[in-house]
Structure formats: structure tokens, C-alpha cells
Image 1 (cartoon, rainbow, N blue to C red):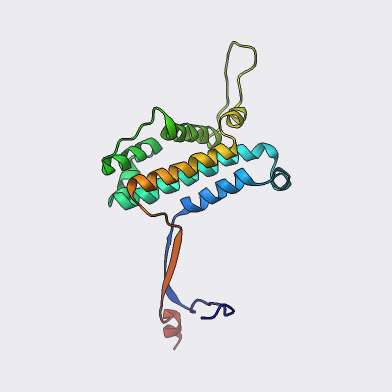
Image 2 (cartoon, helix red, strand yellow; image 1 turned 90 degrees about the vertical axis):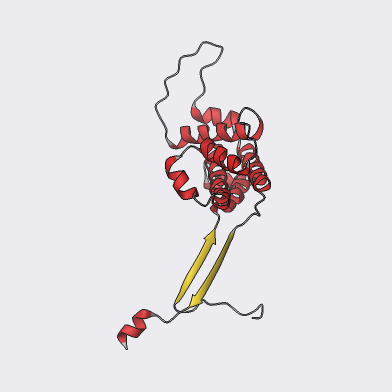
Length: 191
């Protein structure tokens, strides 16, 4: 096939797709973090950038948890039916790798904090807070702006991806599509 030729899929085929959405979400997270303010604000309110950064970074991390989990555990799907917490899933992967994982500091602590913040954003609840001090308590959005600007969320997602892939000795993967051309069964019926 020459560069100027267009590839067309067959009229009927058995298609095979393998796709790691975590890869896409890491790219989206970077785009959110790096988009020039004036261009971002043409599409979204400025206040949406950091909350979106948290949600997209969490999707990236969860995508890589599942990607690596399926590589190291043949029963991953069964495991995830019983264990929904991100921390449990990460601990499970590292136990299979026979490597320690520390949620008390560093990257994994940031990951668990990011997911707590994501939960507060995607499962919003009425906030009632009493606090003594020189300023009122922060809303969830103010906490996001303080703790997880979009650039920080992207850095956490990127570092998590690099760490879990390295620790599991798994190559990064985006997607592949393959197919086997077949006769269309509808064509056979009409003959």
C-alpha cells in the first residue's frame, strides 16, 4: 500500500480490538494541564479546569490499574467484582508482584487522595462544615483548586503510569485493531 492510498475495511469481517483507555486519559490529562488558558476558556468555564483534571487523571490511573491487573492476574475480572476500591486493587497487583507498596507517603498517597477528591466531585453531597479559624471552610471546588490543579493531577497520573508499568515489567499499550474478512451471512440468506 502506498502512502497516497486510502485503506478501507472489508464489507464484512470479524474484528478484534484491544484498547487501553488509560493511555487516552493520560493524553487528555496532559491536554487539560497544558491547554492555553484563553483556548480552554473558549470551551469551558475556567473553574472547570481543575475538577476536570482530577476526574480525567483518575480515569487514566484506573485504566492503568485494569491494564496491568489483567496482565498479572488471570482472574482479574473476578477480583474486581469483589474489590471495588482503588487501593485494594493496587495492593492486589503489588502482592502478586511480591513488591511492597506504601500508601502512607509519596505517589500512592497522592493517588488515594486524588481518588477521594474524585469521589467528592462525582458523588456530590451537601456540605455542612463548622470550623473555627480566620477564614471559612473550603468548598470541594476550592479544595480541588488548592490541592489538585490540573497540572498536578496530570503529573500524578503520568507518574503512576510510569511506576506501575515499570514495577510490573509491562510494556505500555494503546490499541490494536485486526480483522479476518468473512462472507456476510446476510448475503448468503438472500441468495
